[in-house]
Length: 95
Length: 251
Image (cartoon, rainbow over all chains, first blue to last red; front, side, top):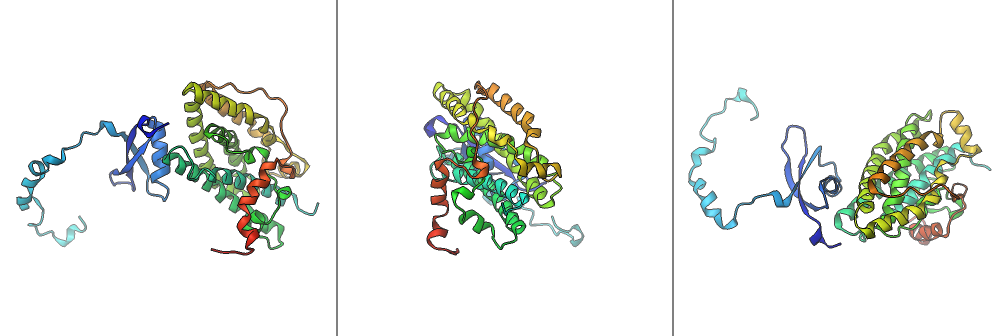
């Protein structure tokens, strides 16, 4: 059995209720159920999670690193998009 | 016999967990893939954790100052009370998985029942173990299905493992006078009461795995009274080496 024959899955963990799932890494597994179990065994050994997602790595469409400038560079000059020009009243509390 | 039934019973539970946990730990660094290496290590740690709790309690019951380490590291093979199934060699991956399935499909309902024991400490240890054993069943059942219903080679190996280990399953359901007294007082679990569930769990898995359940024939026995296969001595050689060579060694 070689790794080439075993599909790769991306693992997402939700660490607490109310937070979103975060990507933590990947595992090899023959199918979804085993991917879930492998993710549990590899990534939740220290109480990291309440919920797990596994997604076939092949199902992910990624941006091309060479498109970096086109995609992300233009935002650098648009500082008004950051919410730093507002005074937040104290009564609002933690945002 | 100088030991009390409760001490002997607790020791049997502890020894089953320690020896099976040790067997699984032998896979660490050798499993087919990294993911399974960690999975088997996790199962081993569950069992060794259970063993520690049972040993600590056994030491308290005995009241002679023996702690978990003294019970685990300083008894010879004849003093061990685990069933023969758990000391069987790892063999190939199918062998390890089938052995774990046969045991955990029994341990899950057994610990569920033990969590209602009149003995509060045993009940508490069992309650914690229930969740762990539920995962052992899930993990090994899914693997058994994939091995049995996988390739010709994996099917052949899974069936061979099942045929080889089946004669060791009878011992799980044995009771003796010592245990009978504890069962009657609501402390120990009557293993006969969980046999139907064990059987049903296995039948469901075997059907999906296209494996044939072996017929009940001659059953191996003796571990619970200290009569072991040669394998246990070899396990203890490794398990106890450090404490035997350097008595009292600490981290």
